[in-house]
Length: 612
Image 1 (cartoon, rainbow, N blue to C red):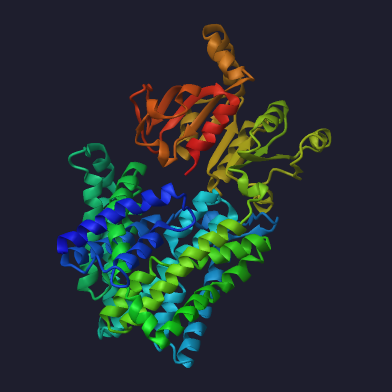
Image 2: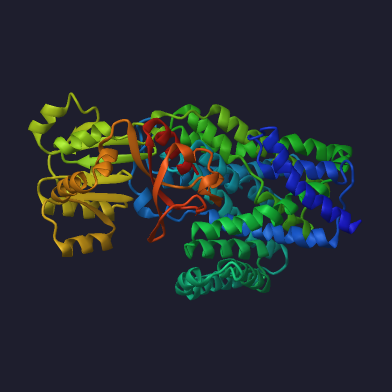
């Protein structure tokens, strides 16, 4: 029977996503579907899968890997002060600081969670205020990220704000859970030892920062040093956590944070995600459903009454998020964003697992909490997807600010793809402004080029900043200020190119655009390679550069792409090297493709390949 239970669990882990794909079930997270199937196959219904030592071991490893991957989900660039201390305009035109809005929103969630927990105790429904508070304030970070990626708003102000709220809703409850388990486990005096866990994480980070770069060079298919390092970090910090009296899930989470800070390649992330979500984590979710005993839950009137109350509390706990978002975003999207943050499953399950070990909660109460979390996790993404409306600003992939108005920048403004870029042109010259203001929709006049003026007016609130004054030194100064302000890409034009300047700008991460060099390159192309010149200037065909992020097209040979006959792939940049493409070339995540083709098809393919 033990072997049969393991076989059925692994079989279901394979079949569930296939059935969901065939039935086109996209609104329900796979984790929730796995729990539901586990309920049907477990003691609540068919009782075909039972608890075994093998399943228990793999399930415990699954929750550890889940927390590790949760730690790797945190984007520390989003926590950068440079990125969030300056305001960004939301779709409603208001100035938004995502970190500030998220902090206020989660602060309201924490207060609401405590009040709801106190209310449940007063009604005699659940007496552990601390445990209920922790559970109510949790947010399923993985589900939130997946939903935001699907809407392609992860880089927009509202997307960043929702994501930061979700990060707080995962990290803070996890830390509170560690304190809760230490105090309730009778080891309150050892609470200070948890500091040693963080010290161990810092030591491991510093120890492997340099060697990890070497690992990436020498790793082979038969060694997979990056994966071995990941599991070493997991077990090292889990062991330290258990020795100092902390929960092993906190150690696993910190291991994921350390791995993230080591800046692994996309290939490494994909391998770790494949191992986790491909095997261990589905076993944890299915076993969670198997262990639920809904027969006892429905037979207990008090526990059954607890279920609808918990569902309502999960939603009410996130009401402050909606109210806070409404001050920064339009009401419809604020409601949708608040609803999405009510999604909770990943931290709830480990929390209840800890509470069961401490005998702080009964099996029936735990089942009620899990079932309530499952109901909420089904409802929230559905409500978000049906309510959230993409605004024109949300649909724009990148924002471009061009400082300097001339014939070249006017051409660029007119030719940049409307679906990909939102372009704003700035000028300090009144006569230029008066000449072009009727032709350039998004044109702004600045009194001067002082850096303080530009910073205060939000000129550096952009993804790409281009400085095209006639004064080379002014371009350098403004470009460097934009880079220091956290702009992702900075391009400066230079009339006279000096080798030392080129090298220095490259080290600073600033790109150079030289008018004279460009004119010479175009003329040389016309003389030496007229076909190349025709590709560049052809209005019926397009030359594109795209970074492949869509996992549906990675790990596959180029000849297996269904649209490969519609484009011509000229070169592929992988890391720091250019490679010549062949039909048998396997495309890896992060590959940069240079290709050409009819502009309508090339445009569609660009959007398809760049979609995460």
